[in-house]
Length: 214
Image (cartoon, rainbow, N blue to C red):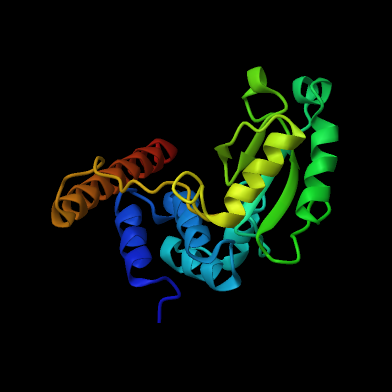
């Protein structure tokens, strides 16, 4: 039985069909798993492994390389405060300390109510509005303690739900582009390509064998 919801499973299968090799779909599938569970659960990792023809260890090892993936439960809102050079000079460390006090959790931890996880981040590429803050990978541009507190209040009251969906939702717009070819045509073309590669490899091996016998 699939761990994914029916809609997530359908999107997952559509993603796998886009790639000539199942393994190539691993990263977008991980985003789907995180969208459903809010983090990469053991069950989600196992599902991605099955879809990509790999092992849970392969999937976990890949996911652990990327900061956007979380292998442990996090809050509904993951708040990142940049303390890289430009933001550091603009008060990034002070804002991070204030965020910790406001949210009631240490950096790298989750608030008691389960709503917020606080992270110290590297450059978020919004240096003209330093110190830079993101919530669930969305720029919120709260550069002072007062605007940060107002943003937290808006999140708690649900006033930013349209702009900041729960953690794990990378994009809410369903992909309409990409391949517009029937699955049968895709399978036939890939089988033809595989046969051609096999023929070339066999010809090369035959040529090498003939050369050795001279």
